[in-house]
Image 1 (cartoon, rainbow, N blue to C red):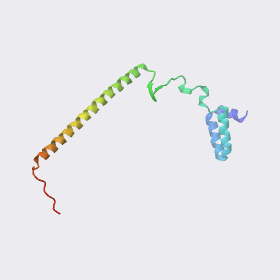
Image 2: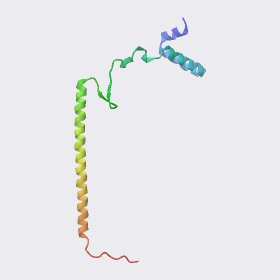
Image 3: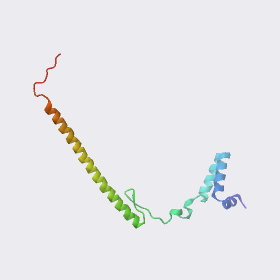
Image 4: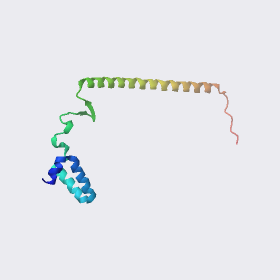
Length: 127
């Protein structure tokens, strides 16, 4: 039985160990083992389809995932996002009203203070 068959019986950890040991002993030998593993397909996860993701369809729109495949969850998520957008809009309107009230209060205070100043000629600056 040749070395490759023995390592295949042990599995991927044996091949990884051999590659690491080859890199430690002589780095070109490590590269040769790595090239052999890639060329032979022994380390390829994609050899048996897409692995655990095989058959799972992912849909994207404008860089954002919009469908999970579970219609109940998709409906819940759409409803929640709609509610959050409405709350955000209401909060922004509240902040705008708050800013307007603050600006009005500051302006009214300024006008009251301005009304208290004596109306007369401004004092002349002395040099």
